[in-house]
Length: 611
Image (cartoon, rainbow, N blue to C red; front, side):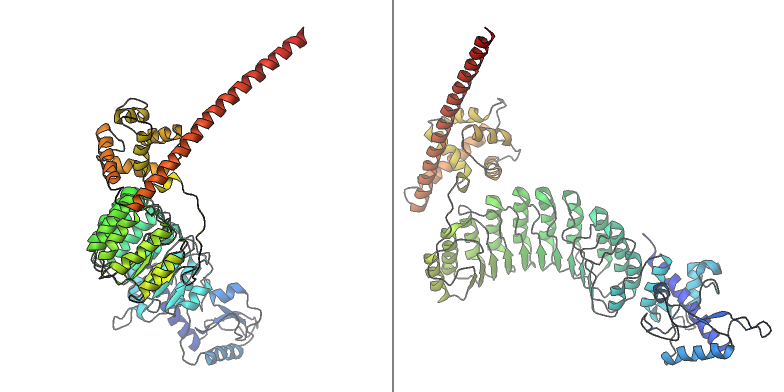
């Protein structure tokens, strides 16, 4: 965007030249008073560095513009009065350090353009005799104000007041892209600010570009918050480039910037930069299924990150599965947040394998990840083998009360689990759960965060079961068995276009015509579980293998009482669905018949009227 070093040199040169001119004017006034005419002429005097608009230094009615520009104009009738004004100002600043805006451009042009100097020449002038550059001595507060004046911007007073603090919170301060240039210039040599928060400001890609230039020079900022700044792909590109050179930023928050699949490669590149970045917040973006697959390899290979937040990113199917696999490959990640995504059956299987392999992960958040009672056993298998996990959040998932009890039993049976914080928000529990929990707490220190973990009598809220609570492949083949369909007949029922393959849309249309109300998520799960060649279609051979898998489940029905109950409930619901379908068909025929009679009657009445 611009050369940061040139900007600093330019402003430093202006400040140095103006300061030297100010000191000379304190000894000899730049204008004399004509005794013959006694005409009063205004002179300019110096403002102390600690001057504010509320201070009174012999001037009345100073307007806001003069206060911002830090210029004081005094009208005098004699040299003695001028000298007294000078002494008044000097007394306010005993240290003798003067500010820079003591001379207006109309009186003495000290700008680089007025002197016809290049930036490098001005920089040489601004250097001391021992070649020590001005940047080490000038105030970056002054540089910020001068840059604001040149850009015709009103300085952000909050930023000026926080320039010497360790934390600079500028969130939601209505800062725009143009405001970021002076701020970035001031940040280059600032050695105080360690935490910079610009969240909620619409700085856009241009503002991020200015900040990125400053980050290549600044060596003190460690925490950088850029959530909801509308950086876009271009802004992220500038930021990634800066992070390659910066070795100080340890926490980076770029959540809520609507980064999608097209920016996933840049996100992957950012994760791959192994400088000092330890915490990365990518929540509330739109990486989606493909984006999840793209960044998964970088997460698995990274050896620096300690915490990553991927919540609210629409991660589904293959993308969620790849990220869960990456957890097992990573050797340093201690905390990961995958909440409010759709892990599903494939993701839970991959996560189970990763938990068994991972020996560093301590905090796992998978709240509201579409985990149900059927794929919960996969998670529990990995949980029982994990030796380091301390906190697990599985709240807001439809694991039911039996699932909550199963989690407690898995922790109790594990010989290596260190889990001591369990979140079960919005999961229904009853007194059986409380009994199991109290039994576990006698041998294993664990705290369960739940609205009712200590109450003895808790009744779970009633929720009617639906077909979406069951394995969709089990639903498909139970229906075929009930209707006495051969496998080829079942295939032809769904393959409406005779293409020898069943698409997702054909599955959806087929279940709708059979009055089996499955959601799009259930149909996607069915397609994923049977689509072995991953071409998003099911051929006859894949359908046959799916039937073999379901038959193996049926064989264990006699031994497993829980599975037997599940299949019995499923058959009951299928019967109800078919009965409703038949009633609906009969009702439609009756309605059509009534409509026909009404039409005939109306036509007959019209004929009689005409006669």
